[in-house]
Amino acid sequence: MPVLAPAFLAAALLAAASAAQAAPFAITYSGTVAANPSLPGVQGGEAYSVTFVMDSGGTTAAGSRWLLSDLRCAIWRFGAAGQRTTLTHPLTGSATQISYGSGAAEANAAGTALTGMFDIGIYAAPATDYTVSGPIVLGAPVSWNVNGSATAFADALGSFDDAAGGVPIDPQRWSRPVAVAGACDDTPVSAPPPGGGAQPVPALGLPALALLGLGAAGLGMRKLRRHS
Image (cartoon, rainbow, N blue to C red):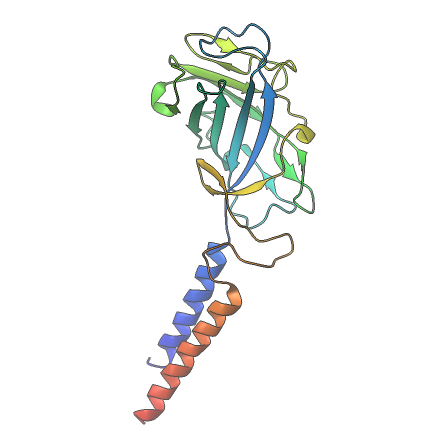
């Protein structure tokens, strides 16, 4: 048993290193509010954005495919300077929460662009389903659509459309997938480049952890020889 313990430690360290590489990824569409929005505090011609955070358990965006069940959060940002407001809507990917949806977000082999995009809609989400930060007051329930045609965002007080006629599902209109800090935190973080390479900070790299494990095993062997 004294000999096996360091080996188990090395295996555990390697497993931890593998798990530490996984990260959620985010994609963002940046659009323009169409003329004559009825949502108080929002003006036509203003910039807005919608971000989806997705997590399939992968370690890189290269060649990845994210289903609706991999969605973790939708983040809407709208309002001019001084009125900027963020709605954060955690998602579970369940059919009971998503009103409609189809397709998948897909990245190219290099992970530098989207080649596929899903459509999705949420109808009448209660106030308990989302959080709002910013000066614009929203009235529950909230609904939103990403399907290229329907009203982009609406609540009990009003709505706004995208100037292009709906939030597009053309993958070329969306940003490349970026590794982010958490399920509803789209702060960019370091991630392994396509094909492997540096590990996310602050996790140790696999070689370092392997050496640490081998060192522990060697120490255990030395102690065993001293007692024999």
